[in-house]
Amino acid sequence: MKLVITVVEDNDVAFLMEALVDNGFQATKLASTGGFLLQGNTTLLIGVQDDRLEQVLEIIRSTCAPRKKIIPQITPELPTAIGVPIEIEAGGAIVFVVDVAQFWKL
Image: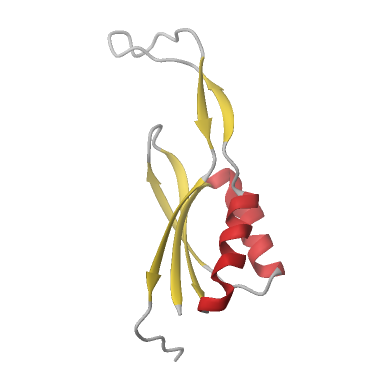
């Protein structure tokens, strides 16, 4: 058994959860913050049998694809001034896969 820990943007989490449930997976949702822009993220804990790991990873890949996003540039010298917009990469997912020694459902 594996534990898949994945961090995704809040914008992607509803679509990811729906895709997981539609394919028979369950996940525990944890609110989290961090990353480049300190935007809201969600961390999902997904328990999966070894033979279904690739299916979960493919669902994550297809649901949380990276995309380009335009944001206003803020300068440290003038934090209230908005500079020229910049393009960043948003979306995607950070995924950790951990072996599970024991699993109990009580």
